[in-house]
Length: 230
Length: 408
Image 1 (cartoon, rainbow over the protein chains, first blue to last red):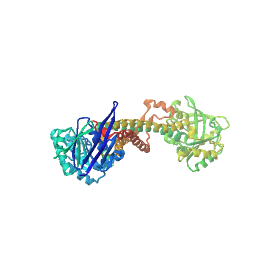
Image 2: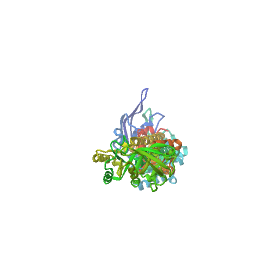
Image 3: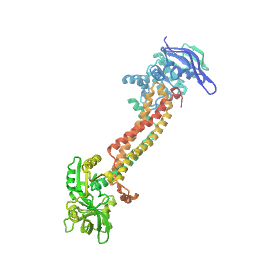
Image 4: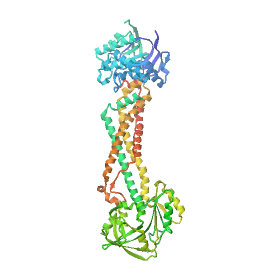
């Protein structure tokens, strides 16, 4: 299988007033196409920082992040904007939909930034909303949707542009059990059907149980990297 | 761009109360600016029309010593011919020649010093529109036994003279001898300047000239130009043509009016500018608040790949759209305000308007707002709004997506 992401000697150091803190410490990992990976670990273990580094939202202090043979750690900020737009999908803990746009407009938004043709955008956005079970909420704004529904729209938005991989930062943290299972079912299905690489940071056991690969971070370093046959 | 406009527009209405408050601020600021400008321009125009158009004209020509000694002795040699020639010059609309000097007017009750102006009624009507200023009686239509005099309403009150009253004018003839003659009050005129009204009387020039002993006497030539903007050039040309005469334009004759107009034009820009600047700070505050409330959302937009230039444009667009709405409503309401206030004019008598007349100001002010001023103010509002948006927009693009998405 093709390697989508590769990190080599990845480090992120924050300078605090007391002493420098290594949020990510010497991480060497590879993520293959179509993997469903959960990054787990206690609070402060560096999960979010690691996701930010591989998502091009933050720059490493040392080491490299190579995505599709491109080293993004040396990219300029403006190049990173383009790179994220073309290659990465994001799902955030707090849904983070654009409140003034309807569900279908939110899902189309990334494709709009990519300057895709209008008809293609609308077709794909409606298709994605149907896949996440929200075809009846196309023209509804986020404030009229439940938390679970908003997160499903966020998933549809992240996947609509067919990115190389999707990073989800604790996507189920704010959801009740039923909504969380529903979301995970949808993501698992899309992972299999569209062969999209999914990387979650989580300490939600429900997510961990669905993942085929679980990487445990402790103090910024990889302490375990396990594969499960699911 | 269309989507950016759509998002910006919807963002404005996320907090309708706040947006409406800032729109009201823009509207009131604009109305204040238009009112202030209109009031000042109105006063200026009224004063200019009163002083220059109705009294002194654009250019006057005299004997060099006449200004210090306004007597019939200081006449313009060949004045009537000179007036004819000037009238034929390009750019000259009207010319009137007069016999002007100081004298005394007396009734049975009292007497006072006045400036006597001997005029050609037809030419004077074309030059200073004296006939339009009549408030009582007729304008040199009476061919009675006694010659006619037209005097100011205020002077008639002081002399306790009525229409038809007999008055005696006393003045020097060309040889310096005192001459007295009876006149009948035919009409009363009124102007804003009470000083002019109580000090200036008009009689027919031919009748006056007969009394002073020179049938062709001219002591003053008044010139009205087709284009007022050319007054400096026209003055210079007349000075060259008539080096022995005293040629003065309206700015020389009414320097206080000239300087007040010059000052006004600069002052007006400042007043309007300061009002709009004040509104812009309100706008800046509103947009900044709206940006700070959306840190998380802006972070997400940048995280998913919305370029900084687009985020910047979105914030600037929000401000621009707000200013366009506020500006359009403000200009429409300002226009309506000007129309309504100008139906009757603004009565300043309660604020000392009667006393203002002593200084040539009207007691009723009519706002004057040239159409160009509306466009200029509209453009200024939008321009300042865009400038006011730069700081909040800059704050927005300085956000770090990774940190911003985690903020509540």
